Amino acid sequence: MLKTSGYAALSASSPLVPFHFERREPGPREVLIEILYAGICHSDIHQARNEWGGSVFPMVPGHEIAGRVLRTGSEVTRFKPSDAVGVGCFVDSCRKCGSCREGLEQYCDGHISFTYNGTEQDMKTPTYGGYSSHMVVDENYVLKISPRLPLEKAAPLLCAGITTYSPLRHFKVGAGQTVGIVGMGGLGHMGVKFAAAMGARVTVFSTTREKEKDARSFGACDFVLNRDPEALASRANSFDFILDTVSAPHDLNVYLNLLRRDGTMTIVGVPVKPAEVHAFSLILKRRRLAASLIGGIRETQEMLDYCAEKNIAPEVEIISVDKVNEAYERTIKADVRYRFVMDMRTLRA
Ligand code: NAP
Ligand code: ZN
Ligand code: ZN
Image 1 (cartoon, helix red, strand yellow):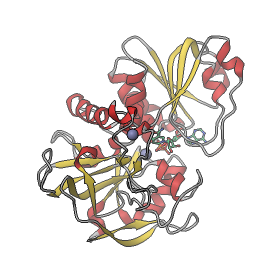
Image 2 (image 1 turned 45 degrees about the horizontal axis):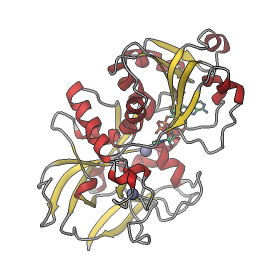
Image 3 (image 1 turned 60 degrees about the vertical axis):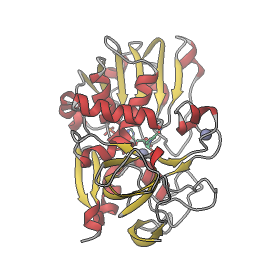
């Protein structure tokens, strides 16, 4: 067994604290990774505080993981020591169901092993995530990171990046379309960059006036404060696609009414309370309300390569691991530009 250090939530109401545990030795098809950077996703906060229910403690959060291969099992073919690699929101899946076979492992009909707050394929061994020094993952669930992507910026792509890229691709967002991004946090700011790179005209809907300049620098051509009813009304029936990344309860009908006929709004944010949707918000213009969960391994690799090629990367604030609890509070207040990434070497210091 491999001694591993990390940070864990011991209960839903206590701050994260240093935590020591063991990882298994890598099996023949597994890779031992030294974690160098771990992003802080709002899903980490929802789960560490048991806001969605069903959280299991102790919990080592973290599913935006970038690092280097330390050692590989004897049958590993895709990686060698010192390769730059990433791990996202899941570390295994059933590999047999239709979704797994199609490379859409995130929608596995069998058992998906989430990177933390989940279990391995035996359905009992708990998984521990990226707020840690090392991890051991089957090579099929490890992503390659191009040398053109700095590792600290690659980390948030493993969740915030793929979660916004995948629905934009699935719904074929492209040149000439009008796209709205609701909420410009970790996910939202990547949504703006991707939609702009795909050729769309992007509008950001935000609660934070101070983000306007950044929104425009990320490629948005319009910025609307979402507490400004007149600004919202003047944009009614004008969007082909809206991506809602907001982490807190809010009125979806406001944004549905901005879609033009046959437009689609896709939800990726997961507020604690269920949303109420008025049928008229949808039926009057045959609008669609959809949702999307992260992305499969194949598409995550495609997204990482797209970022390397197009020079797209998140804006990050690098912090030491002991600042994690402060970072949670600032993320909840939307006071982060735009993703906290922990330098995991500070764990060893
Ligand atoms: P984040 O960095 O905290 O960003 C959320 C943004 O929502 C904030 O920056 C803020 O943007 C806006 N916001 C926050 N509170 C609000 C409120 N009360 N009313 C209106 N807007 C508000 O969070 P994130 O890491 O991007 O995650 C966003 C959500 O997506 C979370 O619920 C997370 O669990 C979920 N998620 C889902 C998936 C998936 O696969 N579907 C994957 C990852 C994360 P402005 O300052 O611009 O208003
Ligand atoms: Zn996430
Ligand atoms: Zn499956």
